[in-house]
Amino acid sequence: MNPTHLSPFGRNLLNRRDFMRNSAFSLGGLGLAQLLSASDDDPTNFTGKTPIRPEIDPDSPYLPRPAHFEAPAKRVLVIYCPGAVSHVDTFDYKPDLYKYHGQKPPGVPAVTFEGPTGNIAKPFWDFKPRGKSGKMISDLLPHLGSHADEFCFLHSLHTQTSAHPQGENFMNTGFTMEGFPSFGAWVTYALGSDTEDLPAFVAINDPRGMARSGKNNFGNGFLPASFQATDFNAKNPPANLTRPSGYSAADDRLTSEVLKRLNGSHLEKYPGDADLAGRIASYELAGKMQLSVPEMMDLSGEPSSIHKSYGTDTGTDLKKEYAKNCILARRLLEKGVRVVQLFNGSDPSGGNGITNWDSHSNIKDTHAMQAEIMDQPTAALIGDLKQRGMLEDTLVVWATEFGRMPFLQGNGTGRDHNPDAFTCFLAGAGVKKGHSHGTSDNFGAKAEKDPTSVYDFNATILHLLGLDHERLSYYHNGLERRLTNVHGHVIQDVLA
Image (cartoon, rainbow, N blue to C red; front, side, top):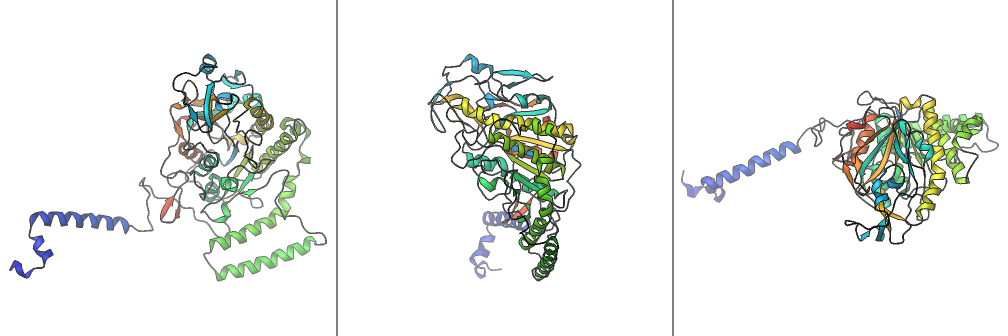
């Protein structure tokens, strides 16, 4: 063939160098096309594992669903303390803080989150060995200290941010930004509920109000609306459940039946509308809650010994109300609620140790005030779950968004935010008892041995509930989304 009869591109193919270059580009394009054309029926994420999206009946989104594998925990209680509890004043004993008290050794930064730094400060409360394990816990939390042999402490946690809203988001949703599903929403999306007349996921807000990130801490994000939490507490029951005066139970039943028929007819016109189905399901659940919630909220039937152990009749009004919230949490778990998130602290006016644990000044007074509210009722709740045999299949998670520095701020009375080391603990189903995982450095400033990310923390909690964090996903905006994003490993050392 005469080369002059070929197009310029064709003549280039006769050149060995151009031929090899074009072949490489073509093979790469074919490979990309193969990846892009992968069947939607068998998608895989970056781990090579097939995502697991639970099959959910839009008309009955709360039906119980099987876990990915057999697991010890059937339900979970999350006790969340907004504001950042000081680990070096509670659970993470550091003798070097006594040794260097009042000094500013090399390595102390000149400035942290809120400004200039001061000197190293020893704990504001003495530490003592607790239980048979001899775990060192401070006198700030003596009631929780009495349960030390039940707890599995994680001392090498670290996070991505030193700001409260982003820290709460990251701990509770796996992302610092807003708009992502909360931990409780992921769990109820995966497992449904073991109760028909109560929500699958309940958020019990602090008597003072919501935490800094508000409903984002227990929202559904891009998951179907059915999986957001229902939020109420012992003082403020769910709104609009009381039957109007002059409206009989028979009238109520008749209205519900008519509404059910109308909703069903409307849903038939719009099949596959998950938002509509979720809204109808929530209304039907609300109807059932008109009977179940008043009974649930009535704590007068609890024996006096329970009220005494939780502390509903002693201390400040805030402590009494929080104690009632703790009793309510136990009652909800007993009735089969899958996830209960109990808040100790709020942020209606900036916090700073008054409404939560954010002690930038006067930490000795403000942390003591928060501990007086939290310690006895929380310890009683955990002890009550154990006494009833519920810790065998209930996972307890005590958490905060980050820690506090081993040195004081420039004001000399408070500790600043510390995202590089903090402590949380687990108890109950599937975790080691009287155990500590990881360590921070000698001052409690940075995670040192076995650094543990929030991704690892959440992956482990999901694992204890029988959920593979690498496979539990939801397809959103072209991505297989997960609670742990593309990170996280199960912390094998904490598993019983």
